[in-house]
Amino acid sequence: MEHSSSTDRNGGAASQRSFRALRSAPWWIAAAWSVGYLAAGTAWGLGASGYPFSGGGPGPRASVMDPVPSHVGGWILAGAAALAGVLVVLIARRPAARVPAAAAVLVGVMLAVVLTDFRVLVFAAYLPVMAVAALLGHVDPHIMATMLIWPNINQMVLMIAGASLASLGIRGLMARSSAGETTTDDAAPRFREATARRVGRWATGIAVVIPVGYAVTRIGWFAGVPIGISPSFMQQLVDAQAAPIGAGLGGVALLGAVLTLGLVRPWGEIWPRWVPFLRGRAIPPRLPASLAIAISLPIMSAGLMYVRKQLAGEEFGATGAEHEPGAWLPEMFFPVWGAALAIAALAYLQRRTAGQELVSRSTSPRGLVSG
Image (tube, rainbow, N blue to C red):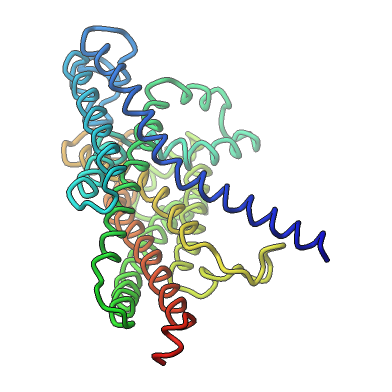
């Protein structure tokens, strides 16, 4: 019995340490990025090599930073890094201060979504699908090696740093929202729970419908049905062995749509019976919310790039794709998909947090007496 109690205490202490480590990770990531890119941006602004964008020269024009020369873009990155560092310090001193928290969210979104492009989505979704396709003999493995270069890695760094900074701001805004409740009854948390439930349902619905529409076209092409494209373009995809990759991406989108439903369904709060070791236990609210937000960022970033290129009449994807509605129209909804997924995740977190607060109040001595 004593051995069992000791094991439980050790396990609980280990879980607490892991939770604290995860909670502190955004602080360290945002601070490290601020210091590193302040130095790197200054060096690029002064003419050093290694600038991770095209700099107005030959190369891809996927990011809004690609046309910006290094002697200008370097200083922009250095300024963003300095601002991020200041915000980290301000939030550390006053976690619930509204202005620094809101600014951290805005700067974080700029870094993670606006300055990046589809290359992060390539890492997150395309690369695993292409790895499977390569194992099946549908794709040349050397194509994947060409993706692991510094400009692409920089995209991942920007998104991770931006997400970390934005998460610090969101924490501050949520803390201020809870601290602003002066009543001791259940009205405020019940209102937050009801509002989050209502907003979450709408956002989740949008975040499910859009990827399903995308998946229908890509899986249809693999099945030989030219949904939204001409037969000649369909043959072009078959000749380029692109249809299997598209079907794989469609499958990933469908899986994402199913998992998104968990943000409004009971199985998104309690581990299902078929999950070993965890079945029946409550799912930590931050786990699904954090994963959903992490996925929403590359979707929004890629979608904004697709919209920019389509409006500018620039080519993206297979040759001639800009003239095939089925090839480009689903991507135009990617920014909406990503935004809806992020809102659904935040609504899920707010709803679960408010629900836990209500349970805590009902089981507290004051709650028992007042009830």
